[in-house]
Structures are given as structure tokens and as C-alpha cells.
Length: 134
Length: 168
Image (tube, rainbow over all chains, first blue to last red; front, side, top):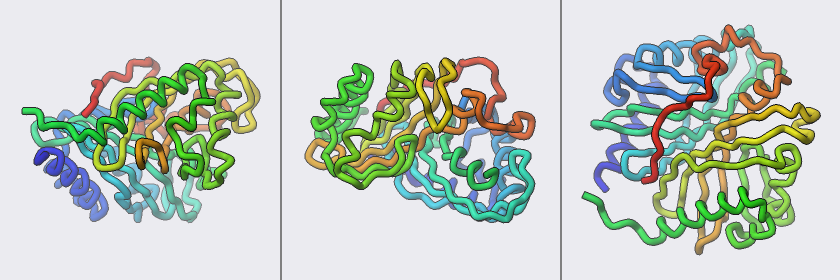
């Protein structure tokens, strides 16, 4: 059971580090050769992942992720979260609207050698886009 | 080393597996075997419900829009009274959905859920479905694909999602 607890703790650590923008320290929990799946697309490698985070934070600089639930077993952790912030920068080509956004996520993380090697990212971008593009 | 599995967690996972099989067989009349009538559903393409009468009919709009919808269970974990699942839903858009008339396009999207069980049945469910990708695939959502580059949204033309199955 120890591994489950360690992995669950690592997922919470990733959220904590992201929320205080210690992006370089994310290497503690994410593997260099990570794979991120989102919709029909994929991102490979830590650097691409941090660039993606940068795009989020450019559009929603105060974005804050709240962990709602963590379910862990074996090398898998599934986290349910709510992300909140204000759209004060360009995001996905949409100029700042100054609107508040709040959207749910259920994300799956796979661990290898104590780090996250793969994530299936699934945040509710529909609700997010509807908030800022409507 | 494999630690002995929690029998309640294993039973709940099996129940969720059976429920997904039931969706795929279209036997929605069997829903009461898996869900309590007053289950609380949060978000996802199903919307929210806390009304007893709604739970039994909550899948109707999706099944009307995508009558051939099939759900594949790509991964699942259980802990305590919860089971979380990562699934892919595939179907052909042959009925009205989100106010969009049938496009006859085949689509596939990620559908992730967290289910809370009590006494073997689902009492609460949180869902996040990739509706944005769905609406982009249906061609009904104005979307700046160039700006989205790097978000993974439509940056790959292929359907190869890669990755591995998990079942912990």
C-alpha cells in the first residue's frame, strides 16, 4: 500500500508546486520523458509540458487548482480537481475578457520509478471556453 | 509483491465494468441494478441531476444523438468507496446534440468518471467528458487551431492515442 500513498502524495505535491509556480521544481515529480495525452493530441517531454503550463498561466495568471479527490492503486492515480482563475491574458487565441473561470478536471497519472511518466489530461475545456468565448 | 485486494473495492470495480457493458448492450432498463434511484450526478456531458426521476433518463439525450455509442474502459482504479475510470466513447452523430443537427460524423472522446458506491450501487458520480473535442470534431465550434497548438487540441491528425492500459 505504501506505493499508492507515495504516488497520491506526489500528485498533491505537483498541484502544490504548480499553484505556487515553482515550475522548475516540478522535476521532482514529473519524469523528463513524460507523455501527456489530451484529446486527440500528445505532448512529449518535461520541457513541452512546462511550455504548456506557461500558456495557461499567460491567459489565466492566477489559475489555482484545488484537489477534490485522489484515488490511487498500483502505479495509477486518478485526481479530481477544480481549477479557478481570471482570464486576464490571451488564452487559446482569445484576448483577455477579465471573466472568472471555474472548471472541473479528472486526470489520470501513471507512475514509473517514483515519478509521473504519463498523464491523461481531461479538464473541462468546454466549460472553460464557454466562459471566455461566449 | 501483490497485496491482497480489498473485496469491496474489487466488487465495486466489477460493478462498474458490468455497467459499462450494459451501456454498450443498450440495456438501460437494467440501470437500477447499478445505480440508486436518487444518485447525484455532477457535470460531464450528462449534466447535473439531484432529482430522483432524472437518473433513469439521464443517458437518453446522448443515446438519441449517438445511438451506436460504445464505451471502452481504458483504465480503472479503486480505493475506499470510490472507483475512478478512464474511458473512450465512440459513436456516430445521427441525432441532434447540443442543438446541433446530425452531422453523421464519427467521433471519439475521453470520458473520465469518479463513482462513489454504497452497498454495491452507485450513489454519486463526477464526470468530465471532453465535450470541447467533440464539438470541434463535429465542426460546430469556432476554434483557433493554431492558437491551440501545444494544448494537444487537434495537433495530431492521427487517431493513435498510444499509452497503456491500466487496472490497479
